[in-house]
Image 1: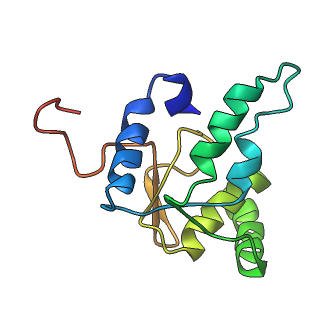
Image 2: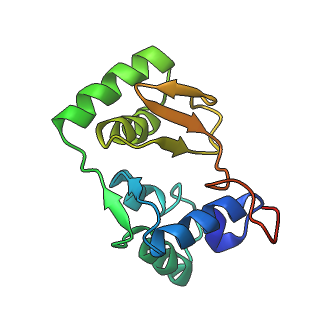
Image 3: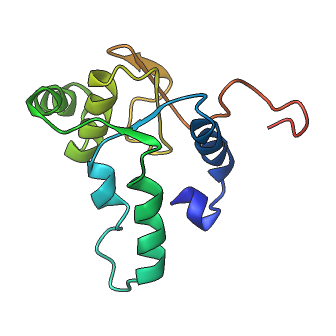
Length: 136
């Protein structure tokens, strides 16, 4: 949603989407993202914004790491080890099972700035360092 709303901090996420579309990196997501992009059950519902959000997430540019027993067992362990909310643990477990290099999130509930089972967890950053022309 950061990219759709141009919420501050959207720039590195937008850059990752461009690199993914160019085939320069693979973005993995959990199918839970299809639910979360819908919002938190807010009273107001913008059908056009919801359609735009779903098309952003439900897209072949992403490698969907399916929620299966392996992800569930790993997520269960992560809830205990890192005191994560179950949904956050599912995202992290999906990254681990999918053998992602990095899980990027602004959510402070994650153990940021460290490697968890081989996956670096941190806030979104510009992949590959600053851009030559924009210094972003």
